[in-house]
Length: 301
Ligand code: FO1
Image (cartoon, rainbow, N blue to C red; front, top):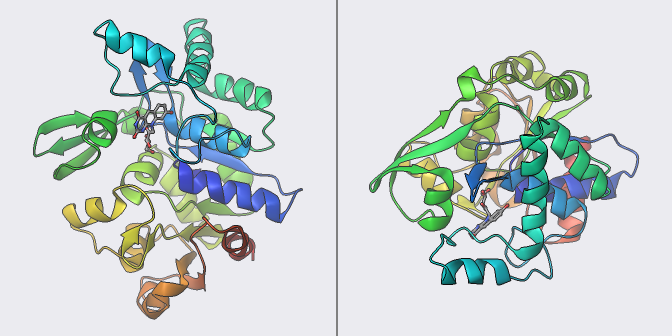
């Protein structure tokens, strides 16, 4: 599964519940990653890891359950930067990762180690071990991913998105292997422009999908023209895309054999099919377990 954060995590969890034996690999966006307080933080990798371990914070949509914030509180009292909130328990993940990276381990190595500690039965694969950083040209000037997303709560006009480092990044061997060997490639219902595109821009990924398009299934993250979570709808509008399942299908055109769209968008099925793919219509909003399982079923069938 080409994966961003929450939408991918929920679909992976549903696929595991749907079939306890299926082999699952997540090829994960690292364009949201940042270094803060000297620590390397990988939000999408951690959201997937925490969710699959059942340790995630459901209210926040990121971080760990039963979290406390004493370190951030003290950091604020010291005059340090605490707008990007790292919980006391979450910090242990970033300390572990950063120490291992300093020792020469790769992000892929560290993800494998952490996934094992969290008891995951899904391969957690950063798309690349090279630095990739999604950045925004906005009405406020250039912003890093987390400045845009968290500091400004994605409430600023975006003129352009750049993915620094992607064109020179090397697709990791395990990620390439998963994309080549899996019987099916799923594009998660993640933000096409800022979660999936940074993965597609890593040389090799789009070529594999184009070559294997009959095995590629994408789930539209837009339902009724709106994103379930995050700024996908607003960004698509600001960057000139049609803000519905047809716009998503056009964005993935040539790389996807089947688009899955929500029942509320059933009237768009013909227009989606006209972009050159098969269309399946089902419930895609995964806040209900039965809907998540129905989506997993549609992805597998
Ligand atoms: N999202 C927030 O809205 N506020 C935060 O303070 C915040 C901290 C944070 C810390 C670690 C982490 O892994 C994720 C965190 N997120 C926070 C979520 C996050 O950065 C975004 O939701 C994703 O990058 C978008 O996919």
